[in-house]
Length: 228
Image (cartoon, rainbow, N blue to C red; front, side, top):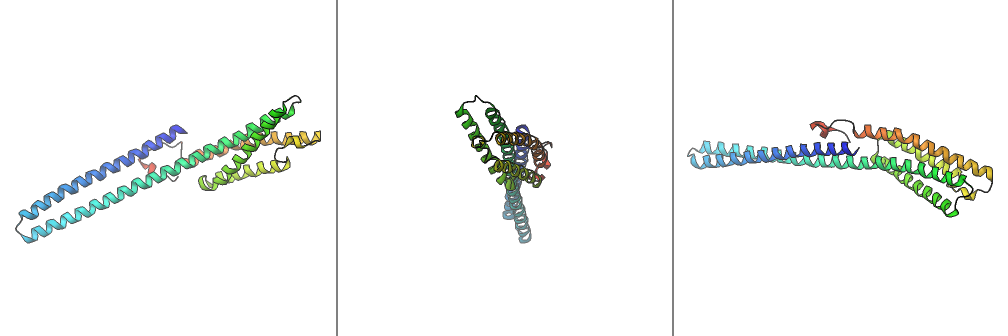
């Protein structure tokens, strides 16, 4: 992902550089025309020739201004598109980390609580890590409507709903609060199943991210017209 992002950025910078060079050359051309027409205006004694020269200079200056305005807007729009791409890429990266992070912490917590000789402090810390990742994935899910595609938003909603469902059924993953041994085992089974579900759900989400951002497409001059 980072290599594709750098390549896209280089392509955008190349486009902006070409626009800047074009604007500079156009301004130099306008300046030269203005100098010539101004000299001609003073040298010409014919009033019509002087008027025509001034008219040409005015038109040329207008085109120079228009070119500068278009170039500035092109560069600004390109910058905005790159910023949007970076924000979206960051969201997909955080989404993947939060999903796999919660799955990992769930697996660790289940392993610790399945043993009979695990230190009490270690049990508490493992659950604290699960709660932290639970909150993190919730925040990422809320941001999906701002940065993710429609399909990715739907996928993220399904993931967060499943996480919250299991959290409600297990007293927010609070295994020590369950005294009954069978209920405790059911809680651990649900947490294990949730970890498996998260790992399987993350891959389609990340694949949609690559497709949505166009990461696998080769950068080119037409990258500017890519929809972020």
